[in-house]
Structure formats: structure tokens, C-alpha cells
Amino acid sequence: MLLAMNLGNSSLACGVFDGDSLVARVRVVSSVERTADEYEALLRAVLSSKGVRPDDLHRAALASVVPDLNEVLGGAVEQLLGSAPFVVSPLVDSGLSFATENYRELGSDLLANAAAAVELYQTGCIVVDFGTALSFTVVDSSRCVRGAAIAPGLRGAVHSLVSDTAQLPHVELQAPPNAIGTNTIHAIQSGIVYGYAGMVDAIVTRMQAELEERAKVIVTGGMSPRIVDQITVADVREPDLTLHGVRLIAARNR
Image 1 (cartoon, rainbow, N blue to C red):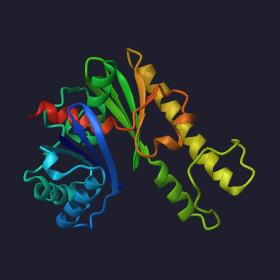
Image 2 (image 1 turned 135 degrees about the vertical axis):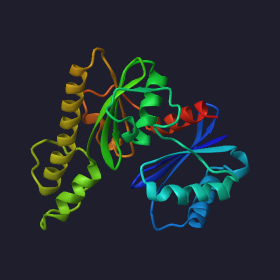
Image 3 (image 1 turned 120 degrees about the horizontal axis):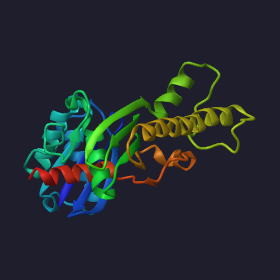
């Protein structure tokens, strides 16, 4: 079995694959303060809670946007499995080509999203990923990554709003009853949830107009359940898209 990992600025998502099937998934808070020993113990514990033993795993693969943690997490995996993880990057064989000015700048999470989207759906795709940042990745039906767009993430937008404004409280991110908020909580929820849904609709609509084909719009990311129902352009939600991309790229680089 394969341990696929997606390391972001806020969390580490792990998926255990038996062939093409995702048989277990866990998500933990990522921290640059943890040592390799601490990550190894944490991984062992959370995998054990899902009934997965280190001996069950034959390989690990990592997509990371936190370079400072790559060596630490790689060391933890090596302690756990006896071998370092395969690291996803634009320099490995992803099965994709690139129309961007500098393909080396593409984040490994966006690369994994593109690889998974075009493989799973066999058509051009726009992947909207609600992670620490909100990212849009465009890959066409010829498996060419055309480019991306990146905006501040939902959680960061809320934190910025309430931390810079003394009288505004922290709120749960969910759609309010109406766009016209009649109290402070609903007013913030309307601005963030409906505002971000409108931004996604607008950016995707512009991207579709620039493509020569109709692209499928796939929504993913840990924050996506809070807003996906408000996005009118979304075709499908695939919560494990990035992990599938890590699996697919790792399989091409045995």
C-alpha cells in the first residue's frame, strides 16, 4: 500500500491507497516546530487509529508547499517505513506538459490536482482548491497545464477581518439565511461566503472564456464543504483530488 501525503501550511493530509482505492485518510495540523521523531510518532498513532500498520505500507509519496518541513517529514517517514518518501515536483514525470512561463514555479499541490483531474475525468478541467490559499489550476484535454490563479484563503480572510477590526467577532464559516445580514454574525458570513462564491464564479467564468474547450470545474480542499453549495459553476466536488494526484504521479515514477 502507498502512503500519499499532501503537506500544506495549515495541515498534513494523508491517504492510504491499496492500488487505486483510498482505504484510509487522516488529517493533522502541520507545525514547523515538530521534530522528525514527533512526526513519526504522530503518523504512527493516526495510522494505527485507522487500522494501518507501518508494515502494511510499501512506499510513501509527498507533495509539499512547506519546504522547511520537507526534510523533517522525510526523516519521519524514513523512520516509519525504512525509506524516504518520493517527492512530487514539476521536475518529475507527471504526465503533463506546461504552457506556463516557468513550470518550475508550479506548486506540487497544484501539479497533483492537475494530474488527478485530467486522469480521473478525461477532459479539460479547472480545479478550485480551498486550502490555506484559494487556488485555481487550469489543465486542458491534451494534459497541458495552462496556468493558475491564487487568492487568499477563506480562513485567512476571516482572520484578517476580525483581527484588524476590534468590534467584529470570530464566526463560523457557513452560509447565512440571507445575503442581507441582520446581525453582525450573518453580515460577516454573507460577505465571506457569498463574496468568495461570487469570486469563484467570476474567475472560473473568465477562465472558461479564455479556453478553446469547455472545462469541468472540480472543487476540492479542506474548506470547500463550507462554500461549495454556493458556487454556481461547480460541476463536482472531489475532496481527495490532491491525494489521488500524489498517487498517480508516484505510480509514474516507480
